[in-house]
Image (cartoon, rainbow, N blue to C red):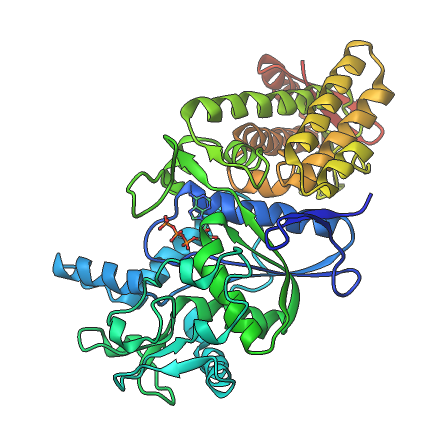
Length: 502
Ligand SMILES: Nc1ncnc2c1ncn2[C@@H]1O[C@H](COP(=O)(O)OP(=O)(O)OP(=O)(O)O)[C@@H](O)[C@H]1O
Ligand SMILES: [Zn+2]
């Protein structure tokens, strides 16, 4: 089966073949860093992380660009409002602080860092060049009143509306103009915004038209082209960005002569109480609060469990259901680990000098716990079918059930094969609880406790070997008894001392 994706522009599921075999170029609209991330923002980043991981798992070299919009009306407004209330924070400090909050939330959720994360303020030259090109080609004009503002001339581009299949005359007016008289048509949108008296100097850049700053839409066109070229495979973002943001990106990039994105994809929104979760609506569940209240890996499972195009309705109930489902998977892995425990594990070898010990444990290794397996074909088919994660998860849960049945029957071979498949699927989805990435995030408390136990027991075994070397058998027996009293048995063998919980 070929990879298929729903192309928002074609409004249907189409075959996906990258421009260059084996390489996928993706641009995803990142956040406007104006205030703390909510879980809608996390879902958006997460669905593209899932796609990226899948493309990588199927042998593609993925370049994922996700921008940071760090100059925008809302950032300037928020800084100004806070300053009015006594804050000394500058707009750029606010943007950077919020950017770090986004990064921390992405990291906590296991969203891999994009290949590159360009900031709008670091790409002003590319934006100016693109605007110059549009003026030269007759698709942009300077504001009628002689300010430095520049607008896209929607009437000059017959394809305006191609992405959302709208006729220009029926479209909403662009919301970004301070002065309607500057524009030829109400749909024309700002490419360059003239510096205004009340705005800080630091929020403006020189341009051929005078000091100012870029409009939001031109930022993404310029950054996508700079890092992915004039034509690339996939452009993504939340469904709320289809119009006007993506419509405008498409118009200005095509009018500049760039083929631009071959496919457009849009993630569904996170709603709460039937409404889009949004900063402006004040109904946001902040990422940091939820990450503190729920296990991050469970939150990732939850936010990534719906089809990426569907609405995800957030409620305490749906999160609790997701937690229960995820714990069934974890429960199986734990059970399998106990049943299929490798006898070479928990073995401590004390070196001749008595000062160093090597212990072979499950921790600190980056190989899979249950060995390598391919994901089941039905799972791969689901992922190839426009990333049908709910179907892929159904295969995962079926495999967990089959694994449990094998364990019940004492069929170690089948149980081990199922466990390896489960782990392979979890790795693709980025939710393998045995992956060291989750342990180091402090998410897996049980894992951290086990690692601590291993360190302590290894220390006792080294001390005991030392005592025996010095023929202090009373001391070595005391150590053994102390461990036994704590429920830990030692067994000496040719490869060292093996310990187990009795
Ligand atoms: N509720 C949501 N559910 C899913 N994705 C969302 C949601 N809100 C924003 N996004 C997506 O997150 C990414 C970054 O969003 P951006 O900072 O532009 O948010 P925004 O739409 O301004 O947010 P808000 O509406 O909260 O002000 C975009 O791709 C956007 O579509
Ligand atoms: Zn964008």
